[in-house]
Image (cartoon, rainbow, N blue to C red; front, side):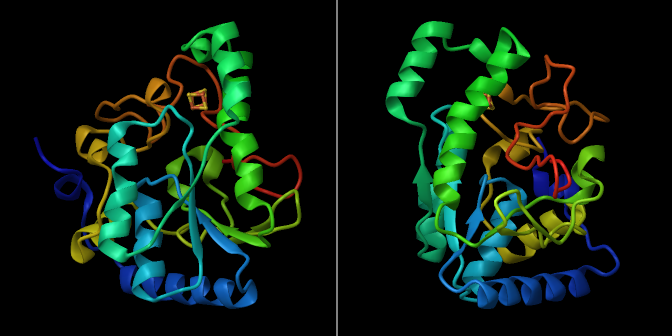
Length: 243
Ligand code: SF4
């Protein structure tokens, strides 16, 4: 089986310029929000590129992730890998234990397959509420959103303001999938082994599957739903482009 690097990494025109601009944008964001800026990493390929740049350029940007309790072992394996490679700890934000137990007891382990409402309730419990704690006390956050990821993300801005008034930076917005993998390949960036197994977009284990040739980037997310393929982490009614 070919690796994700073999399948996707290639040099495209403008890569060096995009890389340089991304570093400048991250440095400017860190300078504008001293001690109050965080990379909310999903531990996917894009966020590993950002982690690499933050570490390589010693930027004062914290790293944090939402450990939903339903992540793949391959995803969790990146936490010690990041610490070993870069000497950086990723802060984990987990769901409220009691509320999670109650939800599972009431609706079952696979509640998300029963209805869109229950799927959203699960995302609220395991992602949205922990995200609010992850962002508490921060004035800015960084994401790995790219415009190429889906139609819903085609207008992702490099910088915006979220509903709470925080600055939200997506410095890879104009990067291609080839750019991401070229950077990973040329810098030996650790990445999720699921990418080698045809998972371009990786979420929770029950809600993510591999995609087939020709399927959309996010086709493997909540594939049983005819929905927007968004969990709410990057959706705003007012100020942002929906993720
Ligand atoms: S992605 Fe699936 S398991 Fe994860 S929080 Fe959402 S519904 Fe729950």
